[in-house]
Image 1: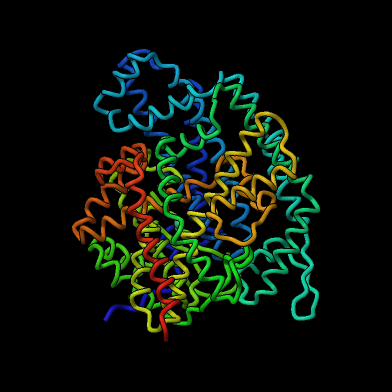
Image 2: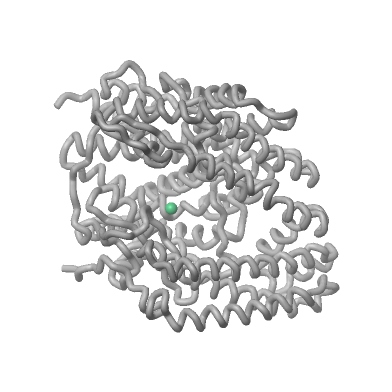
Length: 599
Ligand SMILES: [Zn+2]
């Protein structure tokens, strides 16, 4: 009999007193004065002239590391305070204070990176070969590479200062435009005024008429303001392309691929493998249409529930289910999860004033994590909990690694989480007590595959084509609609009866200025993790050691090298990607067969 796990997390052990914590205040003050020291160091930091500068670089890295840890410790704690109580005004003030410290840190670090970039090639090589700097060679090379990809310091400074109003301002305008839209719905004879977010939530409403109505009303709202959205998107795209041109970057994918430490061939292989395997998902979409009593599936029916999972699990039960199945995969993962449950690392209680959604955050100074979610007993809650535990396990696996070698990119960020979630989602399907239950759980998995393989693929196709056309001038709203519909036809492999022409206006991701191409890293992460999961199924529990070694290296090599070193796989080839896809195809086949079966 296991102990009863707490449902409320323990933040007191980190900094006692919540947003009034004296210890946190002292911590912030210390960070503040350490930052001043780093700023001084950055100001005096000179271009390394010979191997003798090794010691100075080591000192600088240690200072950077210390402050990074302090900032992350405080940032995570403050994030937890805000999430657990949205009314905590003091936490919001702490958060803006923390943001200022982070910005100062980034500025100082950039100044140092710019100096390092100017090091002569032979000196640089000798430095990276030295005993104390060898372990940082990937990160240091990346810093230098990034600085070399840019224009001169002076020119980049001008771009940065013009970006505030000329670039990021458009992204903020987008948020304002969307915030201003009100959707008038008629629900059960009553008129309701909804925000775009609220109307979007109706896409999974069980009532087909409501789904259709909200879709049509939103499509009308986007149409009404399409010129504003087209202007905004063209301005963001135009600014980005102009900066790329000045820097001499030919491809719009150069920046996102660099940020994700991956090659174009890898991206092409991934989409190639997905494109070849869309038929089972088209069949699933058609089956789903049939189940809804329709001839073909419309855009607004993609998220519709066909059956409902009704099984309920008390928190303790859910936790034990996770532990049992983690244990089948590997002892370390199970041991780690037990500790997270026992030590109060998880905030799961269902109570008011908590922020929606879930996250996992790491506290590097105490080598702990905290998981946030609201647990109300569904299987999907259990899967979310496993997902967040996976993130925490990633941090745990990285503990032996120097903090400067822990910054992994977006495309591998979901490796451990998806993996952990898959263990539980698969177990749940096997464990299902009825056909209905099984269908609901399989559908849950399939909806995800459709999102990653079809919806996100269409976003990627649209965005690439939009940027190509934008190079030759402004792209009209009418043309954007055409591009979007074409991309959806292709992305869904003709599996939908109707498309969503104004999707380009409705999706925030196209308007994010900090991260370009906010789409393909999601699909990469999902499939990368699934392919590793497929390997784990093959190799059994001895795979865990390899798995942890892979996680440890996620921030110090390219995606290609990571897969080659730990899995012996060449991810520039479609065969690698097909292993993960095969698991999803199996879900689709099981679903289709189950629907057709009698009883
Ligand atoms: Zn995640």
